[in-house]
Length: 324
Image 1 (tube, helix red, strand yellow):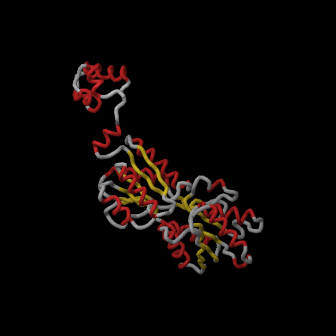
Image 2 (cartoon, one colour):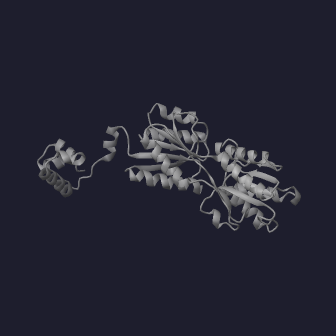
């Protein structure tokens, strides 16, 4: 392997001069710069960025940990964050926690060991765990899709309570009185907030709200909830459903509509959450609460680069389609 010493010998300059040409060419005479670069080209020298980064104490990489890499919402956040990081000459390493706090902790430790310049985390539990894992390493972190409760961390989030209120207020405005909130474990902070918003909307009306939880937030969970509803007499089913995310909503559409016994929205009106790319392409185009995934991803990187902890919160938007 060609070394800096080899380049210096070929160009008849010192190792320090080669280093200056690579890192601070403005400090070197133009003729010397040309001679060194010619030697680099002739010898096929490739600089060892890994070693340089280790000496600097940080790599040129950021880490991103999300709940579910299969969820298009998190994929959209990752795409946007990667594009924004690339503008700063940074790469993005993406990992999925799969809703497992221990797995999340392992990735936090791994990014610290890799000397990442910063970490973006859509956390499973409280932010204390994030702080504890990164505090000793001095790596900055930003909470993604979650409000930070302290000023120790920056955060970028959407007002999920307002999003839940928007969804259920719309169902009530459509004349729905038996409403269900479908999907997700209460341990997920976003699910809790969306449920709180649903409860707030119902409290201001004569409607009722039923909770239909699931262990995860997947299409399969939505199908299972739909099958459970089909097993009930029609009069005991909800006439409006707010799904905790679009994947659950798509599963509900598959089981309810494809059964041939439920018309949507005539018998059951449905609202999802996230407004993923598949929402308008569903068998019954899905009404959904939109989160600005691209803005969330880009803002998270900008907060990480900004230094001082700040908090950004976006307002969700209800996108109307045929399902409700």
